[in-house]
Image (cartoon, rainbow, N blue to C red; front, side, top):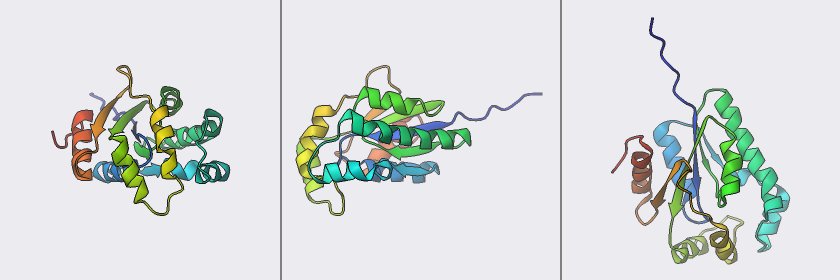
Length: 177
């Protein structure tokens, strides 16, 4: 008798600086794949949010518990055999290393954009605690995906549906080439 193997549980982490379109892209990916979605911003402590609202960038000590909480959410989904999508800046390799601990397979969708475009997007956004003054610190901290990291880079210079199609195709899930 041939036994069918259960598909590998996967977490997709849509990453990049604030304002690059992580939430929009991740929500669209989750909808297309039928996977649950989590916004990493909801895992921040009140102290982290207050710090960013005051114009101060977070440091590694601030991000540690936040990344652990995101990792734990991904891991809980994976333990149930559920693949997931998360919108999370994951700017540094060591942050991505923490997230990679969560599931059998954690893949990254690195959204890329010109810093000027990101600044314009943040300037037009309402109801978010990240001020445009912190855009530079986000780009300063950004470490692009390395060749040995499981993921793809996708430019956000096209409409969100096209970004999603390109990401799905690059990840091998079909989509637009």
